Image 1 (cartoon, each protein chain N blue to C red):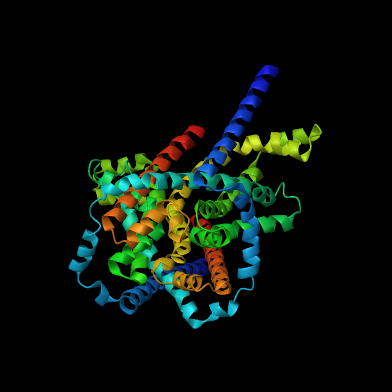
Image 2 (cartoon, rainbow over the protein chains, first blue to last red):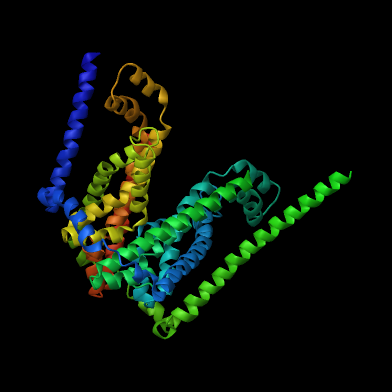
Length: 265
Length: 270
């Protein structure tokens, strides 16, 4: 008994040692010296205190900036609506148990969802800005792609967990594909659809505050301007306003989620 | 009989109130869509710049094709991106352990004070985007892979520590009581009572966060933190559009590998 115990502890020790060795080697490979790494936390604290600390709150009360907040919300909203509409169709294709055709629709839906998910929203923004120019339209398109990936993945998982017995019953009674979806599948996933929708809104709004940094309108554009002008006090206040808005939207969506849960019970 | 009628009356009144409320809510949503679309399409979009549909297709066609001469220059940045994601997740785990300890209601040392502080840290970490974290750290420690690692770590803290603290809160209390009754110290309770219970959840969460961090680390180069993002940024600024497509394909490949790996291991653990 004692031997087994010792064996497992020595194994654990070797594993931990290997883990730290790997970290050490990758630090050397990336050319980071440890002095710089350990001083990073100190310098992080010092630049927060020296550069960012007295946040310029007056700047974010400027009407132009408040308008850009509204623009961010609008971008997130339209992007969410478009993205969810497209993603619902794609996840209907990509759910293997209810897909209309396994050879054509399934790979198309799966590929589009995975592809738009693996490219980060900022890269989407840069691509759309080069294609159609600066402005909110590019941001809306980037957020649409982002929502397709995010919503599509979660909703596909829900669709794949649907109880197939009900669906088969309706199908065997002679319903067509559309009727099967409306009466067999939709009532089962309705609650999780709204839940995922609210979650996607949270994530989408968080993304919409930043994509302006790459030329898509909204608050990000103000952020970029002040970062380039080295106006750190203003940057701090913009970051604070983003945090406040994200917390506000999270509180709102938690409230909505509770209300929907109460209604369905 | 009369009371029954009254009940029915009030019930139908309440019901109709509920329905009007619902209709008003949906109406607000639809009106919101229309005003937003009006703002975006008519007030903000420069249709002259976009031109006709043919011009958009022409712009898109620049991106078609791959730049094969670029591939051998992308392998090292891809490896760098991968390492950045791994180290960022590892550092994020180290940073989130104390935060999770403070943020779990049943083990937090100072009651509401430390609990609130930990929740505050988690919210800050989650609500600031990784680009902003990277900007702050590029200002603090200079260019290179280090600010990317730190930014990923700080962004990961919120999610990892939230999951860990929830796991600690839901841990079975009987082993903890047993260790306490046998005279174990606070460390013994943590090491023998809580950690074995939460370990599967923690490992699953870390692998999930690692998978997301690969995606995030691919863009750290856009603000000066190395990796594939820097290669993307360069190709974009040189207007080498097939090169841009190649870099995107590389990112896609890397993320796919990460996702397959993470799915496989999470299934194995659960």
